[in-house]
Image (tube, rainbow, N blue to C red; front, top):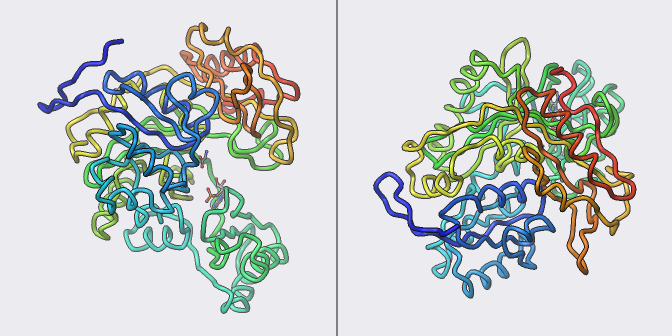
Length: 442
Ligand code: AMP
Ligand code: GLY
C-alpha cells in the first residue's frame, strides 16, 4: 500500500513512524490495527513478540527502559509513541517525554504519571471516585500503623470482604476473603510481611459487590472522550469460571447485558464524572481509561480503573473498531477527539487464549508452535501472539499466555465456535484453552 498524506478535519497529516511499547497479545492487536492505517509508515515495537515482528520492527528494549527508548528515538524517526502496558505509564513515560527537550515534540498516547494513579494506586482511585460521586463499593484504607484498627474493622464487616494492595501487583494484589480469619491473615501479609512489597504498604478494604462484570474502554484527549466497543473477559483458568485467576483466558464483544439503558447510566454516572474529575484535578490524560465495571441489580459500579487497554479484551475490541486508529490517536494528541465518531463492526468477536500447560503456575517454554502459516489465510479469524518468540526460523512458546485466536461471527456463539475451530488448527505441546468462552450467552 502506498502511504500518502491524509486530510483529517482540514489538517494535513503526513504518514508517520510509530513506536509501540509492550509485548503481549494486546500489543499484537494494536500493531495489527495501527499498520492498517495509511498514516503509519513504519511501526517499531519495543520489545514486541513473534507476531508483531511480522508487522514492523521489533526493538530489543523493555517498555520501561526510558533511557534506551530515548536513545532509540534520537537515532530513529519516531513521530508518536503508543503505550500498551500500565507499568511504563505508572512510572511516568508520558512525563519523561514531555520534560525532555529532545523528545517533547513526540506525542505519547497514554496518561501522565499523575493520571495513571487511577490504576497505580487503588487508594487514589477510591478517593477520586469518592470526590467525584462515582459509584463504587464502600471502602476504607489502612497502613501498618493502623493494623490493629484494620483488624478490628475487618471483624465487623460482612463476608465476603475484598482486600486490595494499593499499588501494582501484577494482577495478584486482590483477595476476596470468605472468613474473618482469612481476611486478617491477608491484611497482615500485605502490610506486615510486605508480601507485595511497597505495593501492599497501604491496603484498601472494600465491600464485596455481587454482580456481573464487564470492561468499558474510553479514549480521551483530556477534555473530550469516545467510547469503544465494550467487552467481557474470562479470568479463571477452568471451564465455567472455575480454578485460579489468570491474566485472561478469552473475551467477547459486544456484551449482551450492556444494553442501551445500562450504557446510558455508565456514561452519565461514570464516564462523564471521570473525565470532568481528571480535568478538575488537572491530571493530564491523553489515552485510554479502562473501566472495570460490575452490574448489580441493573446499576453500574466501578470495580477498578486501568490506565490502558485490557488484555485479552483488546483482541476483540480492535477487530470491532472500524476507525483508522492512527487518526484517532492524532485526534487525541491534538485535542480534537470531539471531531471524530467511532464506527463499530456490528458482528460479534470472540477470542480464545491458548496457554502453556501449568499456567497460571509454572509452565515450560520453548515449545514449537505449528499451524500459524495456514491461519494467515483464514477468513474472519485472526491470530494474535503473546508469549511467542521467533528463534532460528521457528515460533516458540515463551510465556503462559501464548496466543489468542479471535473470530468474527453473526452471534457470540457463532464467533466462539469459529474461534475454537481456529485454535484447533494450531498446535504446541501442552496447549490448553478454555472451550467455553462466551458460554453464558448461548
Ligand atoms: P481488580 O484487580 O481490582 O480488578 O480486582 C480483581 C478482581 O477481583 C475483579 O475483576 C473482580 O472479579 C474482583 N473484585 C474486585 N473488587 C471487588 C468487589 N468490590 N466486589 C466483588 N468482586 C471484586
Ligand atoms: N483483562 C483485564 C486486564 O487487562 O486487566
